[in-house]
Amino acid sequence: MIGHALAPADDTPCWRGHLNLRFSQAPGTVMEVVKAHMPLAIQRPFYPEGADVCHVLVLHPPGGMASGDRLEIALHLEPGTQVLLTTPAANKWYRSSGKVAEQIVRAHVEAGAHLEWLPQEGIVFDGAVAHQIMHVELAPGATWLGWDITRFGRSACGERFAHGQWRNSIEVWRSGVPLWVDRQRLEGGSRLLDSSFGLSGMPVIGCLAWLGQAVETTFAEEARRLWTVQPRQGEAGVTRLEEGLLCRYRGSSSAEARAWFTAVWNMLRRHHRNRAACPPRIWNT
Image 1 (cartoon, helix red, strand yellow):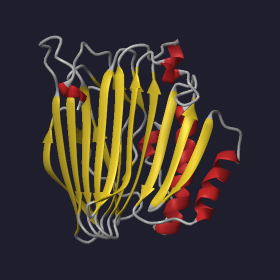
Image 2 (cartoon, rainbow, N blue to C red):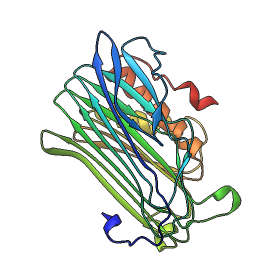
Image 3 (cartoon, one colour):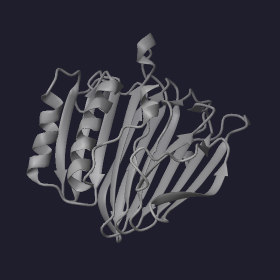
């Protein structure tokens, strides 16, 4: 891990947040807070779709990750539960004094359960040293849909990601077999910022992945069509995985990325979960 490669630059106090949630059927999906340690917290669960699907808002009151901060989230979904997790606002990764800021999410999804991990965008400030890790264990018959949208630099004020480092690792496994492993690394100021193999001068990248069930070719075709139904900024790509679907975005608008991802999410949900997508109300505030 990059935390071992970079020595602390000072003794500034750091946040160490922990959140451990367990979901069971009783009936419907209910949440139990096993552990919550600030600066991580949650609001009471919401049920805009009825008792079967539990919506949870993960709160991080500081609003961003400073040098040396570490947040850990553990999720356990018991058989048949359905959970949607999101965040109230963009997560910010502030300029670092040399220490790595880390966010680690581990999820165990049991048979027949479904987890949707749909955080709002992350903004990586110039000079940030950020590391995100997500590890998902799926039991047979379990599914996971997640997305990640990242903006490099506060581009609205002309800032670029000229210094620092960003790493993002997402792994989804089932019974000891990897279904999808995606590891990305970007050095501030590197050629990848402008290379056609990297960001191609764009400040925003995003990916949406659906894992746990195979999809037909027609779903990849429909995901591409959803990108073209209206004029959009940026570029998009769709790949059919052996046990799922992957969508990627590169452009200048996190709102465009989320709009397309939401349309794909709705398509997949209608077919595999027999219900339409239900965007959390917090996204409109």
